Length: 243
Image (cartoon, rainbow, N blue to C red; front, side):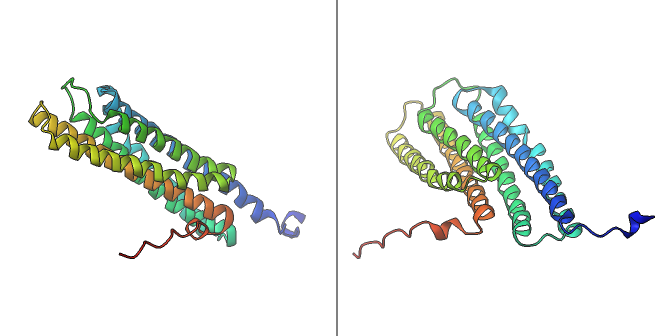
């Protein structure tokens, strides 16, 4: 009966929550991998005119939503049973926000896939394929690196992800300007060409939002690792010149 009289181990809760924390990270990584897969299918469907890939991207969001619920339930369980404090509490709340951004990325991937499906069965090339392809590549890299920063404890990597969002925004601006130019020159395809160009514009807007959500994930990873908000660490932009 000496088992019931043994002295409590002051480090037991800390070690146990460490295992819980690792389990949460693994769940977030699996969710991120599914988002990445759906996004890659959607972009391939759009830029390579791959209808099967577009259909896969459009139908994969249910799995992302289910994983979001699972992670949220696990976070709530840990809050209720482990009552984490300090860094562990900060981590749990950050995870709750990260999975919300991942879920929204999944929504945007579905939106890109649906835009791609609107282009079938017309075989015409896409006038804005180059910028769209590059936007997709940047978004893939940002999603991967934002999650890697969290897993590996790499705060500088999280900072680089945030800076890369400027490149996505620049491509989004380029697509908007090219859309104005193409519509202003009355494309020879007429109404179908205009519709195709507007579809590309809409897809680019969804990709730009993916970049924003990946940036949010990177900022949250930085906060978990350092306890500081990345926006406060970045130098403020110079004031605009007076007119």
